[in-house]
Length: 150
Image 1 (cartoon, rainbow, N blue to C red):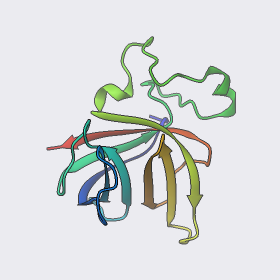
Image 2 (cartoon, rainbow, N blue to C red):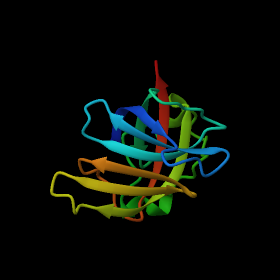
Image 3 (cartoon, rainbow, N blue to C red):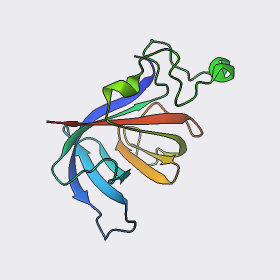
Image 4 (spheres, one colour):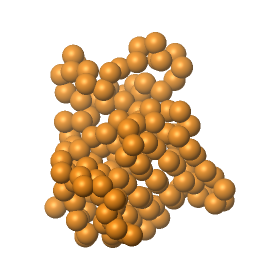
């Protein structure tokens, strides 16, 4: 699907490194199975508990639509979908257990041409993706979708 800009399987290596700051939120550090991407993610552990050694699939998408057309271009901005639009029945969120909606606020390629760091805010919960460049732009709205792997 064109609306999926990144997907990978990660293993949690650390939870709350440096101490827990909030009651219901934990900061996890995870590495992809191929060990070429690392993430730092704030997650509401009251809703979605996660612990060291858990494996999960993380997907970043520009739309929850199941059709192949992504809502990323300026021409589709006037037809912006809402995050809870259920008029079309099923959505990409139905395939995942935990979903957040946020915005890319920083993109840093200073690590070289094959290394980039993307910073995304989900209403105060943060995601940092470090590794190969991801096809996202500063200001772009994005969905984070997660599901645990057995």
